[in-house]
Length: 270
Image (cartoon, rainbow, N blue to C red):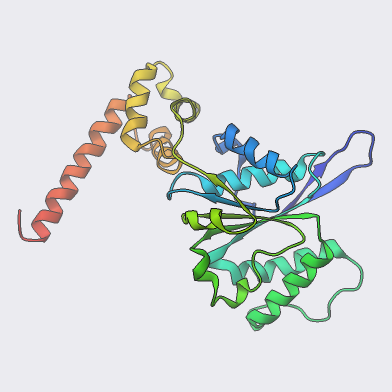
């Protein structure tokens, strides 16, 4: 986790507090401006819960991280604590989150440290108690959550979604958007303009290629942010040389055909 400056006109400097965002590099993220603006508009309204849903690879997690950094550093947004939690590693995140929150609260420190021996119930209660004291100051993203029904037997998620703050859920399940109090935001593949901008920004050796040629590359990958980012990283690598988008497409098709032949052979039908 890290701290960043948050300035308000004619006011003293205020810090914003960010947890779980160490791996987020804004310069490596292609902004989804329309979606980001929708989320920032949400912070100005009365609703406190949002479900960011869509297929895997559409960039839901990156969008949520980008939103949280921007929101917590924006003077016009009330919340100044941004917390990004990974649903499938929730216990590990809670162990780090408890001292993070208690340090913000300050005052008398708890005599009980948290660690591997701390029970799930105790971890959860410590998190809930800290969030209650910091009510109105936090935005929490719970990343990669399953269906609402899948949380029923999860002790760590008891009483979720929590009140007294803003909650974002990133999920493949559209069912969250129909739950009471939730506002839904669907994330789909990139627009042509967004995808083209991402490739132009990441693969500099293709700067002389026409938009038509670059869009062939985009179309081949379905304009999904994750697939595009990974492919661009490969194409921009010093260890792999793809002089043109067509070179990449030809190589991918060749590898796909080889894999298909291998599978047929393994199944005894080739």
